[in-house]
Amino acid sequence: MRIIRTTGEGGVRRRAVCLIGLRLVAIVLVAVVCGSSAPGEVFVDVGEKGQPAEFGFGWGRFEKSRGGPNYAWMRNHLEADLLVSLASGDAADFEIRVAAFYTPQRRQTLGLYVNDRFIAEWVFPHVDGFSFECFEAVIPEGVLTPGRNRITLRAGYTAGRGHAVAVDWLRVKSRQPSASATVAQAAAEASERR
Image (cartoon, rainbow, N blue to C red; front, side, top):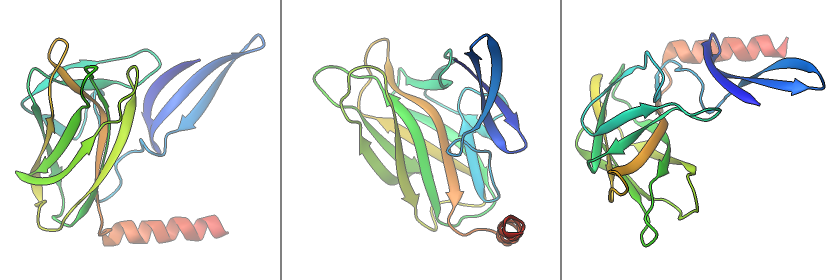
């Protein structure tokens, strides 16, 4: 099976092309966790062009994998910055999908700072091989501001050619839905009931 990422009206879609019998069949899988940005939300699919973010200090090159995620390494430094623009300064949910570069004797850690304020720290489970993990945190009200915000990721160590953590995607979603988002959600629910 070959996975191809495309962006459509419903968000990021994954198209899987399978050979069934002697027929080539295209299947469209909508990735709910990797959906497009909704009102009050910023979704950054690292490695894809046209992202709603500006990559700052500490990033290595973007890597494309065959049939898997596109990602970028935090490389040669213990921290990497990302600038995102938000419409409000409300409290927000933060999600990130990352993989650690391990050394056999220690676990990797990842800290989250937003606008120079500590938010959370996670410890990766020690697994054999390259494996992506999802982590979540709540960004309290008053930390984010309308306009540009700096998200800083801090790793515990670098290893093997300066690699620390590979970032696949991240999402910042306001905990206070905007009035237009609430109206749109109510309209969608009403049309589903018909």
